[in-house]
Image (cartoon, rainbow, N blue to C red; front, top):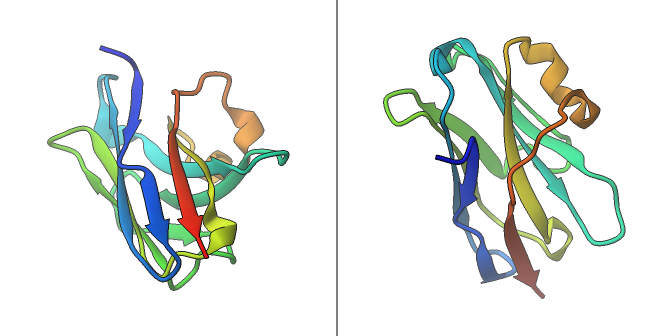
Length: 124
């Protein structure tokens, strides 16, 4: 099994919704903080959202606060990203990742390994 598998992307009109899913393969999944990131064409990869190992704490980039919700399913070793009220500027390839030190998730450079991502395209 691939260590990271993102899915759920697609084409949606502005104002629409999508839910992204990412599954992991590592042991002790419940010990990891989880994060979502995105990379738009011609731009660097950026932080989108994170969730702590307990699920009690979440954090979001200012650009998605109030529109996106991150959650986790430890039984399925998965992290979800519910995206509402999508905007054309949300168009990007979305990636997930995990780290034992949750505060480091805000920095994409922390990670050396990424999945293939899932493309989200929002039309105006």
